[in-house]
Structures are given as structure tokens and as C-alpha cells.
Image (cartoon, rainbow, N blue to C red; front, side, top):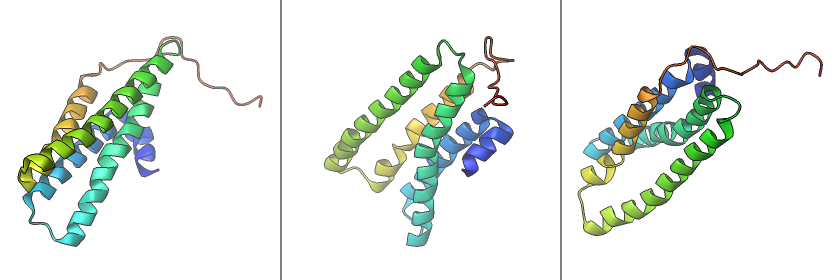
Length: 141
């Protein structure tokens, strides 16, 4: 609810970007192995905000960015890419553990999708207004 409020106040682009950035940074900090257990719990919460929270924010961003004719397709594509990433992440996690990589690699590699998310959100062209979008009128309901 906090991120939704912030996205409404400051715009979904910057809050989604920050969500990805905080997740990536938290994963890098976790990879050092120097954080005490209570700090790790806090970092796990930040990673949750930055991963699951980013997907929810991204849905809102896509829904407000695209016009009525393409919105459903854009949301479907966004959700599909997210689900593919979730499935591949489980497989890659198993490969990393089986390969015996260090703790640093096992955590730091997961900051890469956050960087990709930051770049993707940054590259979406800014729009002055959405053509064909009419505000929802609830006054007669």
C-alpha cells in the first residue's frame, strides 16, 4: 500500500525504478556475508519489496502507460515475462548451488535482473498524455 501511494504521488516509473534498485542493492549487501542475522531479515524484506513489489508496480505502470486498445496485451506480455523469469530463476538457482559457487556469487547474480528492470523502466519513452483514454466517470453510479 505504501508503494502504491508513492507511485500515485511521484509516478510509477521512479518508484518502480527505486524498487528494482533497492532489491539489487540489498542482494549485493547480502552477498558480502557480513550482515548479522537480524540485518539479513531486513534485507530479505527489501528484496521482497524490490521483486514482488516491483512486479505489482510494473503492472500499474503498464496499465497507465498503454491505451485502451493495447493495455491487455501489454499487461499479458509483462506478466508472462515475469513468470518466465520466475521459472528460470528456480532452475538457475539449482545450477548455482550444484556448481558450488561462493555465497557472493549465489546472491550477487540475482542483482542482475534488478539491473535489467531498472534499465527497462528507464528506457520506456515518456508520454505527454494517452490518446483515447477518457477518465472514468463514477458520478452516475
